[in-house]
Amino acid sequence: MLNTLGNRLPSVGNRNNGVVVSDEMFSVRIVPVVVLHDAHDAEPLGRALMAGGLPVAEVTFRTAAAADSIRAMAAIEGLIVGAGTVLNPAQVEQAVSAGAQFIVSPGLRHDVVLAAQAAGVPVLPGAVTPSEIMAAQELGLDTVKFFPANVYGGAAAIKALSAPFGGMRFVPTGGVSASNISDYLSLGCVPAVGGSWMVPVDAIREGAFTSVTELCRDAVAAAAAVGK
Ligand code: 3PG
Image 1 (cartoon, rainbow, N blue to C red):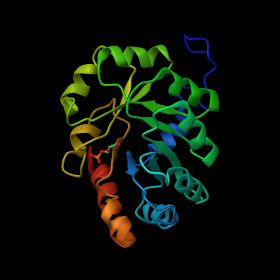
Image 2 (image 1 turned 90 degrees about the horizontal axis):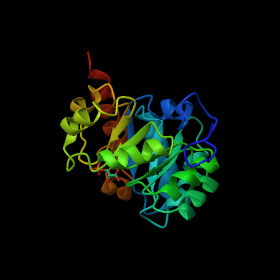
Image 3 (image 1 turned 60 degrees about the horizontal axis):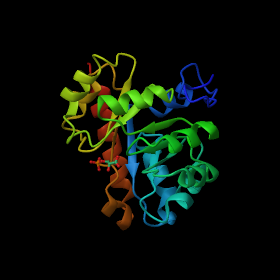
Image 4 (image 1 turned 30 degrees about the horizontal axis):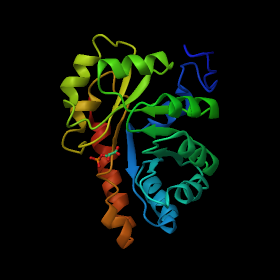
């Protein structure tokens, strides 16, 4: 399948940005957004996430440790690891070579989306305005990151945008926590939220992985409670 710019889309699912992997990465409806300053923390953190019931991690390219951290996490069986804060095609290449299974970007850059599509991995670019969402559609995407969700109108904004953009799915990230997760997850157009509240940088730095696991368990329980 080709997108409207004539580029071949990943043939990893029956939807155009790779729903097979996406639905797996959204299985518990939370994507932990991880900042790792030391790649040595990646493996214990990955295991802490798994133990807490969150078999997915978005490792952000905000630190020099990102690629090595992705490599370490990609070796953990059952953990789906992707790259976040991907700002340019070179980082797409670095992330995918390290084993990233999905790409997340804070905004929409055509060359980033095209590089991810060419590499055959699902990509979630940030899109918060109607024009950005239309640009994402033009690139053949059906899921975008809605970031920073708390600043761009939260659940009310997503609900309003889902009226004209019926087929679009939104992954709100930024300011999401256990206290407002249900506002987002109760929307049909939200497959998952992203957030860092269960992976505090200080806890990682201190090696407090048991407390990360506890936070993950609470987050998973909060997500599971939505709609019950
Ligand atoms: C991101 O990059 O997606 C956000 O920084 C995560 O936002 P949060 O720290 O408010 O959860």
